[in-house]
Image 1 (cartoon, rainbow, N blue to C red):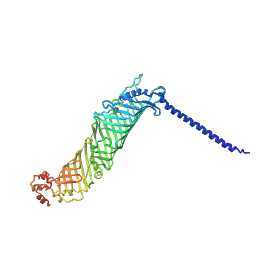
Image 2: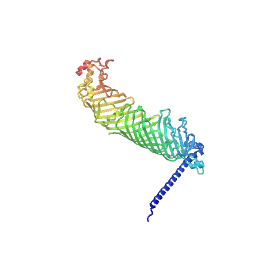
Image 3: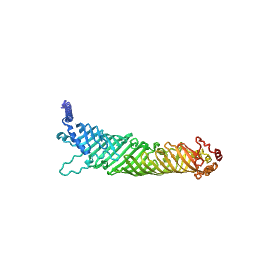
Length: 562
C-alpha cells in the first residue's frame, strides 16, 4: 500500500537541499567579500607603515647617474593601487648651455616596484616609470646640437664591470611611459617656438645598453596626428640623436603651415597624409614612403586645388652634416606626372633645397585644375584646351624664398574664350588681320621663367600663333597679377609695318627687324596691348597726353585707313 506522505516528503527534501545550497553559496560569498575587504583594508593601511620619502635620495641618485642630469622629486608616497611609489613632482635639469629652466617638469611620477621586497626588506626593485603630464622643452642650438643629445650617454658609454666588482646601477625597466606631455621645440638664438600637445611615449624593456621597442603618438597643431612605432637602441654613447632605430611613421591631416613646419610666406600648404618607413644606423637616416596631399597650393597667390597630389619618395639624410638627398620622387596629380630629385639642408637657420623637376609632355587638359595652385591666372572667361606642356625646372634657396627657374614649352593648345586678334584690334592697323574668333590657337610657346616671391619673370619668349604670326620678347608678372611686357610681333601681312611707320613719320630705324613692338600692360585677367612707339624711334607721347597727340596722328590714320 502506497504511503500518502511519500510525495510530500520528497518535496520537503528538495526544499531542504535548495536551502542548504543557498546557505553554502551565501556563506562563500560572505567569505569572498570578507577576504576582499581585508585585502583592501590592508592595501589602505600598509602605506601608513612605510616611509616612502626615505627612498627619494636613492631614486634621485639613480636617475641623476643614469641620465647625467640633476633629477629632483617631490613628496613620495606608497600607493599600492597605482602599483608602487608616487612622487607629486619631477624635474630634470637642462643643459645650462641651453636654458636655466628644467628640460622636463612633470605633475607626477609613478615608480612601479616589486612590493614584497619593498614591504618586507625595504629593497627598491624598480620595474616601471610613468611620467604624467610633463612639459618638455627641446632646444636646438645654432650648430645643430640638441639639448637632450647627451642625456644617458654616460651610462651608455660605461664599460663592462670586471668580475668581482659591484656594477654601477643603471636605469633599466620593463616599462617606461610618458603620458599626455606637452612638447615645445625651439631653435637658438631665440627663434619661434612650436608646441605639440598630447604626446604619449610607451617604451618596453628600456635600457641604455640594449635595443628596446617604443610607440610615440602626438597631436599636431591644426588637427594633425603623428605616430611612430618601432625599435631603437642601444643608446649612442656620444650623442643620443645618433642612436640606431627602425620605425613606421604615420602622419594624418598634417597642415605644414599650421603645424609650424613651413612659413606661410613660402606659399606652400595643404593637408598631407604620410605613410613611411624610417631607418637610421646613427649616421644616415633613410625615409621611404608616400605622401598624399589634398587642397594643395604651391605659391603665395595660389588657391587650393581640388586635385589629389601624391608623391612616392625615398630620401637619405646624413645626420652630422644635416644634408639630405632625394633618391626617388615620383609626383602624380590625376593624369599629370613629374619627377623630382636633388638635395636639401635642414639647418637650424632654416630649410634649404636644391631640387630639379622634370615634367615632360604633361596633358594641358589635366593641368587645368592645378594651375590656380601655382598662382597662374588666365584671362577672365578663358581656359586652355588640348596640347601638352613640358617643364624642366630648378628649385633653389631657403624655403619661403625659393627661386624657381627653367624652360617651359607649350604646344598645340587653344586658349578658349580669349581672342588675341580681337585684343590686338585696338592697336592701329592690326584690325585688318581678321581671324578674331572666340579663341586663340597656340602652335608653340617657349619661355625661360624665373619665379621669386617678388615676381615671375619670363624671358626669351617665342610664341607662334598661326592665325596671327609670331612674337618674341620678355616680361614680368607681379604678385598682384599686373603685367609689364615688351614684345615684338611679326604679324601675318604686316611685316613692313614698322619700317613704313618709321619712314613716314621721320623716326629712327627700328631694331625690331620688321616686328611690331608692343607693350602689354593690365593684368593676367584683363591684358591690354599698345604700340611701343619708343622702340619704333618715334619718342614717347608728351607727359599728360595719353592720346599721343604730339605724334602726326593724321598720317597714322591715313596709313591704317582709320
